[in-house]
Length: 95
Image (cartoon, rainbow, N blue to C red; front, side, top):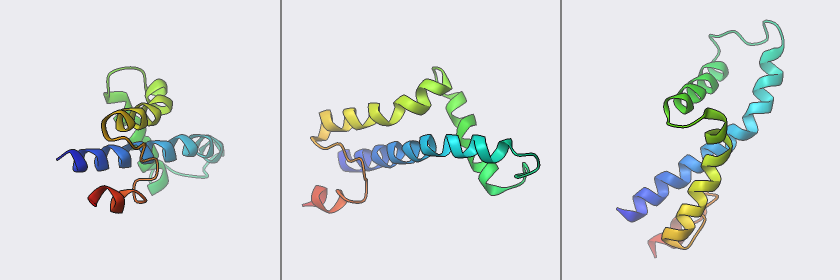
């Protein structure tokens, strides 16, 4: 159970870090007129993630930038590994 929870949390932190990298790209790309419509998959995924952050307690901007480091520190305290790249440590954790 501890291994599965650590795996889920590490993937959540990794995907959140990807979204932090995605924010400047999203702002530049979607600021162009009619570059992306609201029907595109990129727009829907990004806005869906922002809606998910809006449902969590706290402010969305702090969650966007602070969620990944908080999860990595929590994983280090609980398991002894940061697991920044979730697929790299999967084999070591099973041994």
